[in-house]
Every structure is written in structure tokens, then in C-alpha cells.
Amino acid sequence: MEEWEESGPEVVKRFMYVNRRAPYGTIYALECLEVVLVAAAFDQDVSVVFMDDGVCQLKKNQDTTGIGMKNFSKTYGALDDYDVEKIYVEKEALDARGLTAEDLVIPVEVIAAVDLREIMAQQDVVISS
Amino acid sequence: MSNMLHLINKSPFERTALDSCLRLAKPGSSILLIEDGVYAGLEKAAHAEKIAGRMEDFSFYVLGPDVAARGLGDTPLIEGLAVVDYEGFVDLVVEHDVTQSWL
Image (tube, rainbow over the protein chains, first blue to last red):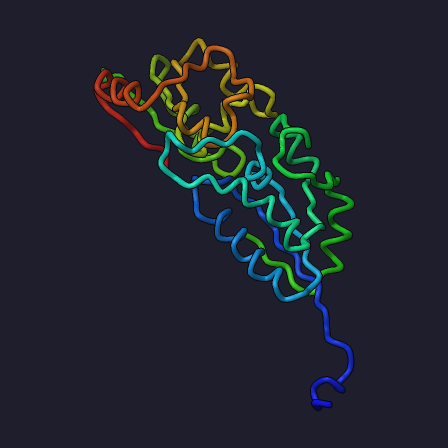
């Protein structure tokens, strides 16, 4: 048996990706989605948060034909394929924009900031964009 | 006195561009929401009154392709907010003496 296989259980870290930007106006939303999909291949404990304008990334019915940019909203559906199942959306952010979970392209857990705070505090790595 | 077209391309949730514009623009001016600025036009949003309450002071416009891109084509916009396409954008620029971008 290889030595590295005897060195104990693999360390799994808790990674949280925090999306706070609207799509299309800046490149942050698309870049973060790509980072999450890459990171998901490494069998870590991944959670994704959408808060502030980040909740707008998940709005249904995006149609970018008029602005000549790629509509990447459908790619969020791939998170489930990559076994990224912890997807949190801040309730306060939805409320402030007059949106609800029904307006979003994927099933999410809508969570109050006070509860999201506890989950955030448990992370080993938090990456915000 | 020149008549001015004000362009807002930043989200009102993240930047103060809209607030500053509404504070500094002379009544009678036009204000066009583009890019992430279109989020200011959401009727059900917490800040909707910022624009809805100034309809008598300004002519408000929003760029349709930016609304559609963000999935807001099915979402109620503030009453009185006129949707324009790119040609309408050009018309507004031509009709006004000065264009100011609140970056």
C-alpha cells in the first residue's frame, strides 16, 4: 500500500462562495460560478450563497439576445450535477428586491441573515465576489 | 439652459449614483437607467419610491435589452417608467444637449 494512503482520512474543508454582485454589469458573477464548478471537482464541502445583488444572478427568464452577452443563468443548474447542494439565498436580499424563491432558476434554501451568519461562521474558507 | 440626459448604469443597492443624480439633476431633466441601473426600476423593490416619488420632476426611461437580459421582462416596473430600445437610446441622446454618465 502506498504510504500516502495510510496517512489518515482525507481532510475535507468547508468552502463557502459568497455571490454579492448582479450578473452582466460586471464579470464577478460569471467568474465566481466558474470557480465554484472547478472547486466542486475536488470533493470538498462546498456551499454557495447568494446575497445582496447576487440574488439577481438567479432570476428566471434572462434573455441576453439584446445585449450580445452569453446567458449563463442556465449554468446554475449544473451545480446539482456537481453535487453542490448547499445553496443559500438571503431572504432579506430577496425581499428588498421584491423577489421570491419562485422567481429563481434553481431550487434554493431561502435563509434569514441571522441563520446564514451561523453557517458562515462554521466555514474554513470563505470566498466572496 | 441646456436640457440634460442622465445615465445611471449602477445598481441602486450597491452604489449611490442614482441618489446623487436625483439630488443634483435639475427638474425637467431626463434619466435613463441602463445596465445594472435597471434594478432601480423594480416596482416591488424597497427603494421604488425614490423614482416613483419624482415622476413629476423627471422623465424616466429604462433600456429594454438590459431589462430582458436580467430576467426582468416579466417583473413589474415602476409606473411611468418608459422602456426604450437602443434606437430610443440614440434618440434620447440626440434630443438632449448634454449627456451625463453617473459612473
